[in-house]
Length: 254
Ligand SMILES: [Zn+2]
Image (tube, rainbow, N blue to C red; front, top):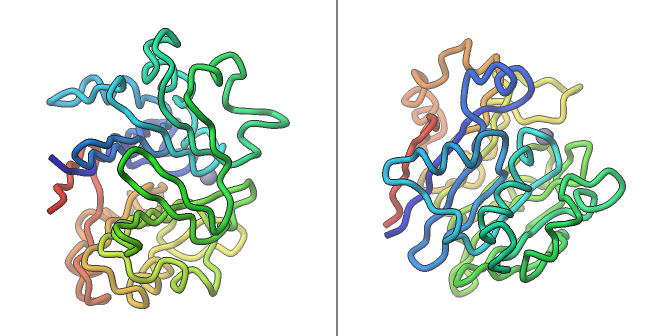
């Protein structure tokens, strides 16, 4: 069984703190390998309350794109849950270096619960069970931030483009994915905020031309614009099937 489950689709502060959308991150299940991406606040509850429930004890690893709270709020409890409270050390954490140092968001006491911690770098390649992830580029988001492109025999399959401002190399970096997930916080570009907007996401979709694009991580302006009603309009404009993620959405693979 292979699917992507959106345990939350909240982006940025106000949607998060009011829980207008849940903030549980994204759960990937790829047959033998399950991994969790950006476990924001509420991930554990959302995972266990899913129907059927998702079992953190089955996770191979956790991918943390960056240390902001809406992505990392539940990362420690998910490491506890993945490792049976530390009694069954296992699993991998892929994390930017600055989430582990200075003011770390990963508690030190539970790092030894993990089989390994790998520090993300642009150009890095990482193995999570049977899944290979490549980090195409460092993103521009104020703190160290990385997305990934899953590869199968070297070919790109699913891409995750988390929080960043738009920059020229982005479409090039994410070219060739069949499914592209884009954190699209803003309805209109805001050069003062290091987040992607809908018109910028559309540029990336047009230029990378995936089979399907899934937009998620919505801020207030996207919810006020009732973005879920604009799937067809955006699909028509980009020439690509665009899906606006909703809380609990299970997206089947193959
Ligand atoms: Zn962020």
